[in-house]
Image (cartoon, rainbow over all chains, first blue to last red; front, side, top):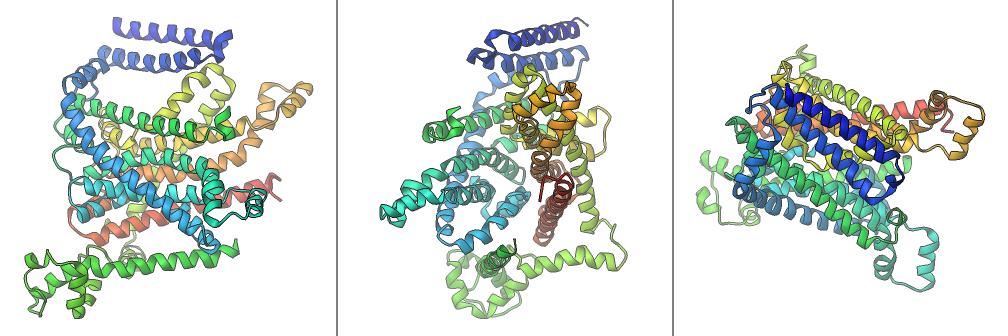
Length: 281
Length: 311
């Protein structure tokens, strides 16, 4: 009983505190912007712990966060091994290959207005499709190791990136293009000095969408066969063997990696496209 | 609109051409194995020997067997016509025989997937709109919820999918549709939330001030100004949301041992080694996505025209 009350009291106090901060004079300061969401997330974890302990939920169904934290600390070597297999080998390699391929294709296609007009609707449509479904096909083509995961990631990130880059390359106004022409700039000069920089906000938008897709692709592909390591492998076997705490630790890693990956790309975006209105805030 | 028909058709034709061309190198090894078993002359003999020979040399030295690769029963890469035939066999042909709801029909599986998708879509949209209203009207919700809404999207949902299924079965909800709907709601929630926050904040402050001079209540200014001006944003994000919801349902079906639904067809096709079934299910999912987005697009056009936002 006491667990439930403690959890609810903490929730109420955190809520009051957050309301107080949001109404106070410091609401716009950086500290408030960090403290409020962190406290909100922390409250959710405390509530989870309190509910699980109060209702005595079996740990093969939903382990309390404290136990997940213990498992996390105790099995860092397994988690690190899975991280290397899934994220570094599968997702990251596929992400880089897919991004380079999409960027190259976009620059080539961009030379022809005809192709651009035809490819944008098709690419937009394909980008909305459940492409993860090709995972079993690619696993049977490229084998069980990380090459097939990488291939799934390449296909998944390619189309969103392609569409964004092609749109970005068209995002220069006639005035700027005319200016380049009065400078007698060649095609490649216009491309390097005007159009690629102008396309960068779009490219980064695509790159940010692709970070999540890359992780989803790498993990799903492991459900269809993988060597005996990898995050997707650990999750699917962990559910079967009732080591749910390890699965949650794995989910925690996935969440951290996903957020860090996204945050990293967003950070690079801020450094590279500092001139864009959306970054000047 | 009409100007892009020819380019789109050209691009599609190029894709089909590349696909068709890729069938020969992809299938040549399987085709040669099959020909060898039928006691036909194959150069070089023995599939182990052939493993070290490149596919292009195999094609060049066995030109008469290339055609076999285009008519395999279990191809590594089926031809577009094979996929089309399989699609027709499991949809149109079943309807003609009056067996549209048989377990082998993609219409049945598509319907299962569609149901979960629509439930997830409805749930995700409702939560997204409510969340957006709360964010627009309450500063503390804005500050605490918005960062987590963004972080939640960077978490690969597939990792959570098996857990959602375990949890929902523990709460006595054993329908297979429910966990799938939760996953698709999770994916569909974010685009709707972001779009609606943008939409509800889109009225200019002069417009809000005008309503204040009319002595309008908060509810009135919400119903008469904020809500109508958010509709274009809503539809744009609904179109993204429905596609995301379909992805969510199929992802929810893939790793969970589902037995019905398009994702389950993909899974079963993988386990039984019938690539044609996988390809047919993939294309059925693509067609479903296309139909859903087109329907929403039509609704958007009609609604916006009625509301006078489109000329």
